[in-house]
Amino acid sequence: MKVAIPICQDNVSTVFDFAEKLLLVELENGAEKSRNEVFLGEQSVPERAAILRRLGVSVIICGAISKSLTYTISGSGIDVLPFVTGSTEQILAAYRAGKLSLPKYAMPGCWKGARNCFGKRRGRCGRRMNNDIRN
Image (tube, rainbow, N blue to C red; front, side, top):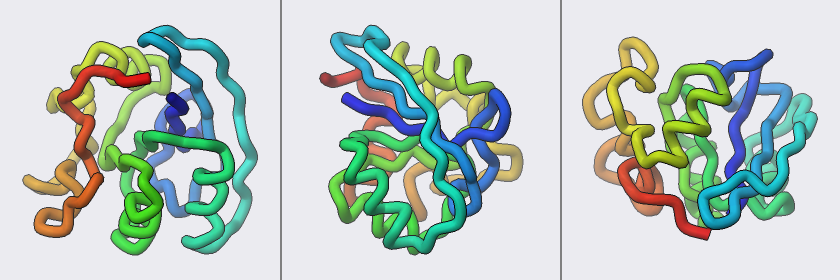
């Protein structure tokens, strides 16, 4: 399973739509198998979703994200875990432990339901917030 996190320095980028770099972590049986950084630059919504598909991403953990990008990514079969904040290492550890849904990882000002991916149109969005890691 590949997990992507848009990054700014050593933290989750505040807005995925404008993030320039992506941390790509491959997990196998809950353990980290590999990691690398991918430069994103400036791309449109469809281009960002296409990059994630090409990289084989299963889950993206991010800060704020536009609805259009969320729906495009989740429509591609990628789980979107939005409105997360913290250091990349802290967030990866929380995800691996199944604790990413704890309030301390939520972006400040995040409205109720936002982390459930914009309320009514949930689809695959946010589905793994409380679940254990799958391969």
